[in-house]
Length: 393
Ligand SMILES: [Zn+2]
Ligand SMILES: [Zn+2]
Image (cartoon, rainbow, N blue to C red; front, side, top):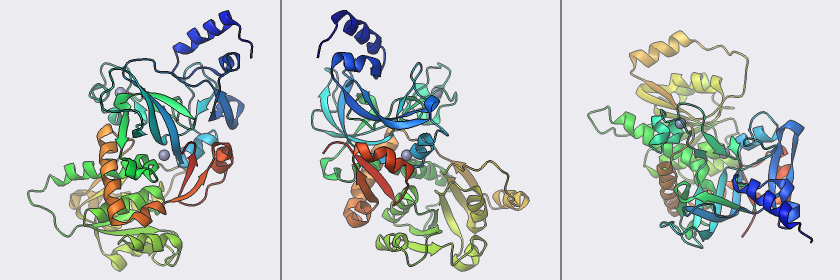
């Protein structure tokens, strides 16, 4: 291929300012890499070609992407409801649940070396000096909303062959977790929730015993949340719409949790049929389910909301009753989103623990692996528990 030197230099200059070089310069340089991207202004979801990234600073790490999980957020972005390309860019590379392998490290990188497996954190801090959360490295608590999220908001994601990222945003994953390491990111939701819950529980001057937890939803977040509860020797009941004799119910029972189907027990009957729960972990993204389930919350109980409801029309809930209970029973309801580096580290520890307790159940969460070329189709057709795009072995 003939390359016009002056053109290439101009291109490289322009691209050096971006984490990801632009498509226009790729063909001129003759090196290409594939990525799955959404082009919101054209309403297109497809494989695009981008130039491979290179190390920009001494703290940078070049990572070969092995696997990327797909979740509801990706599907919303793929349906053009959500997702913002980086400034000046038409496309956004999708994918935020990634497992990769370190290929090259900058000279000041100390915690990682070539061959290490890594999970990649998603949110990047805002630039506002007054945002104490971001300045403290806790952009999961960002107050300005000006953060970027890789694969979601103003920063390309990981559904591509190689990415470059600062060491600070990479978390080492033991090689023995190679086949399930793609679950680290979705597990961070439960990992962060459990850290928050521990902080709330510290309000009691006694050590709570015999806690009972209710998990709403049997999707990947709910199932991983239930595994976390079980791994802490707390009784877990998963409540979801799938039938009690179905695959999800069997999977739930296989790792020691109880399964209750909404088909058999309407949510209003939960307290009488199943008793009260000290902790509710909501992972369905349905406000009616979440707030009606509060009837089953015990005195001093905590309800953690992690789903994002999509509906825009109002629903009917007796909020007088909800508020009365929250006050008179010292209850707490809080939300949790995104995860810090420490939650990723906790998530890696939890996954190792799960792989000791219930390896088959963990592996069975990944119900489908497809190639990058098949990813756009997969995004349009949800199915199974966790679908994964396998990019490199
Ligand atoms: Zn996700
Ligand atoms: Zn911030």
